[in-house]
Every structure is written in structure tokens, then in C-alpha cells.
Image (tube, rainbow, N blue to C red; front, side, top):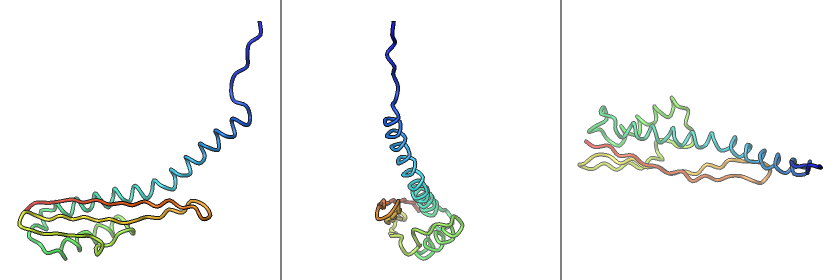
Length: 121
């Protein structure tokens, strides 16, 4: 009885390995941008819900975010980029920005990030 051989050929293996390598490279280049977005979102939520800033001015909210941005080394967004709306019910802080991640040569990934948080008085 003869058994039929099964498995990947060398060409098949190279194609699969190339595909996996591309996915890994995309992940390694993308993950830092996504982590920074979630760090920014976490800090915006913390500033919006801060009990120390209740009744404060828009400048107070911007300064509090600026201090957190320095501590977490966030460079994609500045306190001036925040859209802060205060009314009688509380504060709404929102932001949006783009992050370009170069891959190789003329190829880049462009991420459009946006987020918001609200806090009540």
C-alpha cells in the first residue's frame, strides 16, 4: 500500500511564511499607535471625571491634561487639540487626530482616531 504524501511544498511554505511575516510587521508597526490612542482616551476620561476640577475653567482642564500628557509621553495630541465644552450639567471633552505610520518605501498606514469623555458636576 502506498500512502499519499501530504503537507506544504517549499513554494507553499514560502508563500505562507511571507503572508505571516507581513501580518507580523503590520502588527508591530500598528500596535504603538493604538496603545497611544488608548492612553490618550484614558487620560481624557480621567480629566473629565476628576473631582478636583469640578467648577474649573477650560484652561484648568487643558492644564490637567497637559500634565498627564507629559507623564505618559504622549506626542500625538496636545492640550490645545482638545475640544472642551462646559455647561451646567458638566464637561464634555473630545478629540480627534490622524497618525501616519510608515511601513516601507512609499507605503504608510493612516489611522483616524477620535474619542470623547464626559464628566458631571
